[in-house]
Length: 302
Image (cartoon, rainbow, N blue to C red):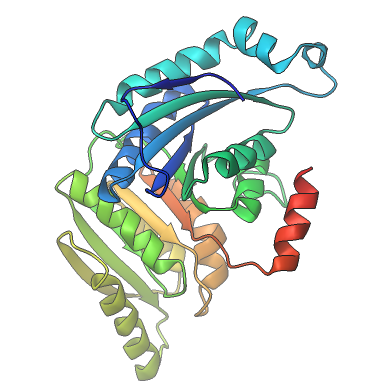
C-alpha cells in the first residue's frame, strides 16, 4: 500500500490505541496532526499519518501502477507527508504512509482496516455544500461507513493556541467520545472546558432538570478544569455561536435524544464553521452494527 516512514522505532503495540489522521491540504495538515498527537498522547497511543494520491478511473494515470504513481507522480503529497511527520515530533510513536486509490473514502476505510485503527481524523473545509452533502462527499462517506470512531476537524485561524474548549452537549452515546477529545486537547494545552446545553424559552422544569443532568454527566467525564452553563435561547445555533466567541475550539458530539438532535448533528456544527473563525471538531463514535450490516459493508467496499 505504500512505503512507511516513522519518526520513532517500534511505533505502538498491536493492542494499543491507534489514531489515523488523513492529510492532504498543506494549509491544515499541521493542525490535524497536532490534534491527533494530543488525543493519542492522552490515550497512550500512536498516530498513523496517511495521505491519499487520487487515481481517477477515467484518468491517463489509471494505466500506471500504484507503485509507479507513488514514485513518480506523488511529489506534492510526499512533501505534505514529510511536513506532517516533522510536526508530529517524537512525543508519541508516529508512522506515515502514502496510498493510491480511485476513491479517497474507500482508500481511507481500507487503510483504517489494515492498521486496525481505533479512530480516524479528517479535515473539513467549512464551506457551504450543495443539497444532500453535509460536510463534503468524502467526509460524509467516511462518517457513515468508517469502521472506527471518526473525528472531523474544521480548522480556524485561532487553532495554534487553545485556552478554552467549548463542548455543547445534549446527551447520547457520542458524548463520552466528544468529552474525551475535548479533555485531551484541553489537558495538552493547559486549557479549560466550557460545557453548554441549551433549552428553549418555554422549557419545563423537568426539561431543565434533564439538561442539568446532562451537564453533570459531561462534567464527570472530564479531568481538565471545567465550567457548566445552561443557556436559554430560541436558537441553539445562536447560543452556541455566542459561546464560541469566547472559545478557541468547539467540540461537538452527535446525539440521539432531545429536540436538538438534528441541529447538533448537522446545521449547528456547519453554522459555527461558516459563521465563526473558531476551530470545530465533530466526534462520532463507531456505531454498533449487526453482522448483516458488517457483511453488507464489506460487499459494498469491494
